[in-house]
Length: 124
Image: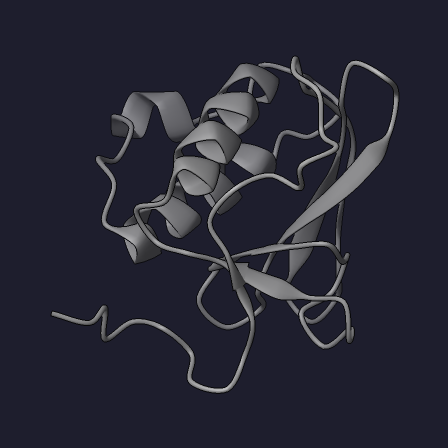
């Protein structure tokens, strides 16, 4: 059965680019006034990868800082890439530079159908 949450006509990713080398670390995060946000992640070689959350639903996308950029690819729900991105993001939730990130990650998890953190975890 096809995943009906796909966005027809838009590219998707389910794995990291072949040249990405673990481990990954969040080095930056920011929010757009329109409601979207993104994080910049570096790999072991210091190559940067942008991962964003769309402004409407909070769905994960890869390769851009805003969902309207041409380089945007949606992260396939239930994919290895999605699971690993959420693991990386969970490690960044305690960083005081991005107190809003907990809510953004919870919203993205809701869209993906992954288990939600407890409400206490979402409080600053």
